[in-house]
Length: 269
Ligand code: NAD
Image (cartoon, rainbow, N blue to C red):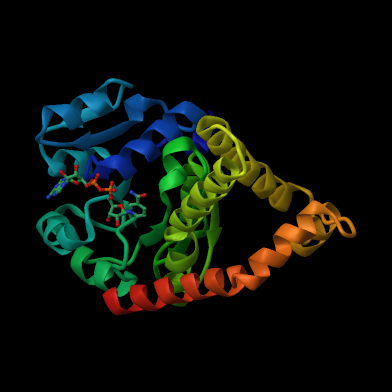
């Protein structure tokens, strides 16, 4: 491990998102679990973290004291209360990272009392190391801070940087997007069953097809339209299926889904 990466990481809010980040970070070797801490009252959540070597305190204050980087991973409704309570211990010596949906940098800065902040929107595939995350930097966050958080979230998937103005659109696309694809997988599997496949095989084929197509889109360097054209031969099976998708308004439905979720996000934040 590079010396530059040796720091102490703390989670305020020992929930699902914190656990997937902590597990990803320790599995990647980026930080040993002994450099990670959190706090929780419930024994069940305490055990979930201590089972892989994370230090579990009884109080959030101990987590803050022990950490150079603090990830705020409580539900959005309690962020204000938690930050106001901890603000006497928070200072620019400690980088604060919020994953809470919809809570803006300017509010985080006001409640934390400083601007060395980074806001991140991850998504649920973080649980299997395939998150699509986006970060935006507070006014006092440095290039080093950006690099550090890029490698932390790089341990649970991929991360990009964007202006906070894009965050409602990010929420509509990658935040809510897994649900759109689950529906596509379920529907493709139903199609397989309707065409005669056993349910298990249909589900596995649909899931692996989505995974494979996503890998092609990420790794081939080709535009998705070109990839589609390459599997659609004249008068073939694929173009017959594509025609039905166009008839059913598949493209417009996906475009509208992202825009509707982005609009909804803007009314929440
Ligand atoms: P969660 O409910 O699993 O975790 C939150 C945890 O915080 C719970 O264990 C709760 O007991 C604990 N908590 C509540 N009040 C506390 C307090 N005062 N001090 C310390 N801990 C406290 O929720 P989650 O799914 O892990 O989400 C956490 C945050 O991550 C949310 O703000 C959410 O918007 C954000 N987020 C989650 C996902 C996701 O994929 N789950 C994706 C993007 C963003």
